[in-house]
Image (cartoon, rainbow, N blue to C red):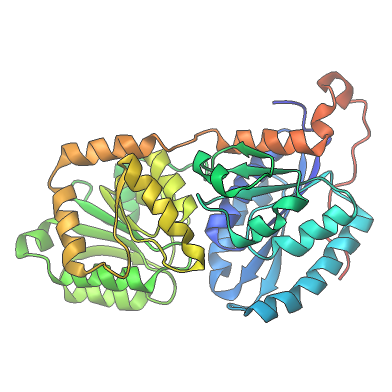
Length: 392
């Protein structure tokens, strides 16, 4: 990679795992090469424990991580109301220490910060996680120098913007854990068929209820053999724990799992939403999946799930048509056929981009202009002060 020791960058991301994880992973890739990176993210109370766990590694390597408190839910007018102070905050920050580049990782929170950067002619990059570009990224596309895409299929929705396919950065530990270690962590049988259920960083009530309905229909032999590892989200943790107990099933339940590498290591089949980060992690692990895409928010997850199904790595069940009986039938087919699971896992693995963080870091350097500095000259350049939080 070109020299990065003179780079001073600001990343802005929504606070969900799907946006925050790629931002943090890319920040770590740049920080490892001497760059100074600050990450601002929208912090919502119900996701604060997860965000704190996700940001721990980044803080330890010197990345400045600043949560921006946000309400759990905001209307369109509420978001507009909050854009003004965030724009002012960014302007004050840039007056103190203007970064070389600002990178948006999606969500409406990116808009006022990137627009403030463009007013000062600071180069900007967008990273798009999904197959279909999000509304905010589509709106910001004409204002930025480059859009980094997770999947080649996204080029059809990027318009005339300059694009580069970088892949989607995931946590470095994903795909590295052993099943034996995971069985100890979760108190599960290392040899039993295991269904991992993941609803995204906030959980998914519809998925939780669907899985509970399927669990209630299991035959006695399946109740003895199968086990579940269920990431419920904070709202449904107690209800799902009670449901598995009532069904007399071996299961681990939790609101979230900071060490997702262990959860994936113990899974034979995954039932999940179709968020882009989830798909990238499944691809890295080569895990077959049953995907139930979130039907709202522009139906981005529907396009993600269709891509996986077309590749042969998973089966898509649309939420409006998903029934416990259908989910159970698909689980029975996949858990009873090791060869099928292996084939689907290999196809899922084809979607992986293991060096996505490095690719995105290179794209950021290329856009910033700092990358033009030759390595032999970098040591002679006086570095800028690290980006710090401006007064409010």
